[in-house]
Length: 257
Length: 283
Image (tube, rainbow over all chains, first blue to last red; front, side, top):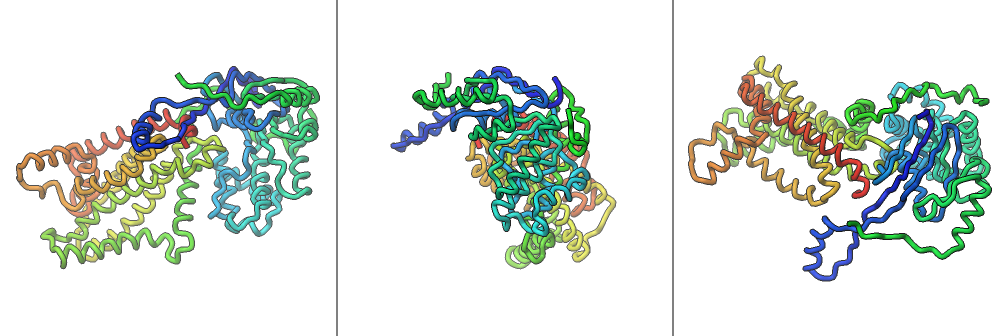
């Protein structure tokens, strides 16, 4: 396995669902204990096999609830697959939700260090990056203000500035390019293109054909938790549209044994 | 590949193929634990005028209250009762506060756990860490009190670092265990609150084991049997013996306290690491 590689073999992620519909006191008491044993499971992802080579860029496409986010979280290591295997090698920068670890009470400065530690960087390593991060975020003196006083644009800018400076081998982006104003968005897009030329593996979730085609030559279409198509990005959109035309079966729930 | 020089990966990635074990993982994230401790202290005392001084003021005020109660309202025969009480109350407060805050810590950080891959044990452990800072600082007013009432200082006080270490190890283990249990059963939090209240009276905090005397009703015998297995019976003398009795804790006390502490940490950490991949489905 090489650095920057992602290998997914027959992976599945199931969520447990508990129905909460109680009408009588007796039911309430009985249900209390019943839900400990039986629950329904919902496979958000099943039989997914994908191999992404180092430096490759892949767009993940699919309807809402198709399992895109679940797949990204599995690659990022936040979720452990219920079956199958997900292997990655190298540092992952998950731009799944920018500023996920921010504490609103702390200043921007403290949050930069805290987030760096969350990604496994030491204080010293973060000190070397600090000025660059602040410059990229264009926050200026606001860096020493508590985050709760930031506008949502400032919040997202600091989040992106951090995520772009962690020397990733694998970059995971979940539609975060909708942050900030037009100019900042352009800056982010350029930065991602830089990563592409530097040979960083790249997983991108998008609903826009245009931005996906610009960044990724390959695309996988997810349909109800399965990979329905894997190939060139141009063909992927045709396959996606075709699939969406059919009747939607809705999420499949099967009773757990 | 025409890679931009600035974008060349600064640190050549030399990641081992093997997945890091849970202990290696924690060592890698040790700085995060420190930062979370600092964050907790910063946020807790934010906008309060006295800030970190409160950790010392708190036991001081508590001391005043107890001293008044036990000297004028219901006098106790105990010599220097305030030192007697505080030397047990401070470790007890450390344990119980860390446990109550720590068992909630995985739930409190669920937003983060859903989005970033991080060894989840850092959350309960950092709560223990911030309470350890509080506990250590609260020993300052205790020393002031000892000076004030003329309590003798002895070489046994040199044992205190080991006492604090054992208390911290024990508290970490129990907190890890209860933090993971709370994720699966929210009831644990409410149950623990009541149990801690009971355990305080069933532990030698307000009294000493030697003062119990020879009553022999069946329930009193049961109480004494419970005291014999209660870890607090061994952990509290670790502080009270050097501070109040000016003597080293007995070998038996130290041995049992160490066994409880290491056992609690091993079991707590193992269970936590085993169950933490399932946490995300129950948050």
